[in-house]
Image (cartoon, rainbow, N blue to C red; front, side):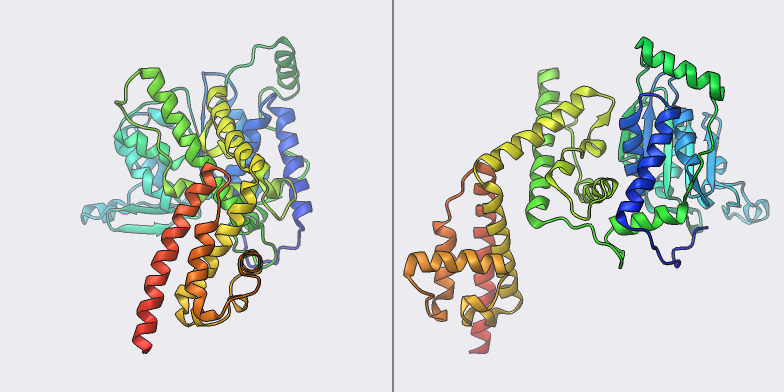
Length: 438
């Protein structure tokens, strides 16, 4: 077990260099897989699971083993799945004495339950009963079977498969693997030459790196990414947060349109990105910033969210995500929509403050709200009226400000509609609370 109580003394720059060197070392051993390696490091930094699919002999096992080999101080559980296996293959053998008494208790020592890393080869060869038993361990990091309910230190599982088997259970299983990649054999003669070179040197086996990353460091990096570190903070502006959600929604729309165009019907299951996955995309954004030694997420990081929402190795899916990103980015950039989004989001912060303390509506507007919202609002008032109006007119001023706000593009127009609804709801709360005081 790693020790999170030890102070984390590395800088963001040192962390980024360490990860870059580790990725480069893996790239030297597993040829032409740089994008999948970067995706895998994002999975590790965000403590999520990854699924690798390819035909036999494409190097899935070598890639996975070499990735885990880069870390020190974490237990790795390995298994090749088969249809005959039962849950005890993953959770440990059943305690026979407890079983005689009618209780299902696993002896978890040495099992996936007590491991930080897991490698499950040919995962879809496992039967549905066993896969269903894995769901809570993968998602909640807890073994929950019978009366047994114990926490697990499980950090990341990488599973490999030669094929996808679709059923109700496997769909739920796939949802646990936020990162997916298809590893296609590369027939380029030069790439094959480089692979042959590595085989002649290492015989197809994994290689110990000159320096390993302590698993405790990986955990500390994960704490930074989750925003739980006292030492470092990787920030995301409100404007970029809103932009991210627009890009994800547009990608979802384009993906569904492409699906319907292929089958020429509206039937069948739609492509769906859950709110949970959208929220976890923020962890990926911070991970991408950390890999670049930055403490702030940029628009360019959003372009790589296909690591989570598309399948790396399928060019059509990646191109579709990049199309969604580019379309939204160009729309907001050409129209100065980012500035307008910032103003509207700051305005909603002002409304949140009023809703929290309705008496603020009785004070001069310049005394509350964020600096940016005050500036834009005060500039509008000065342009409209020449000076700040008496505070008893605040309600009318806020309503007039939104009414006069002219969106520059569809994305801002939609946000304005939401802000108008928020303003109406806020004024209802304010009037109710002020009437109580009267």
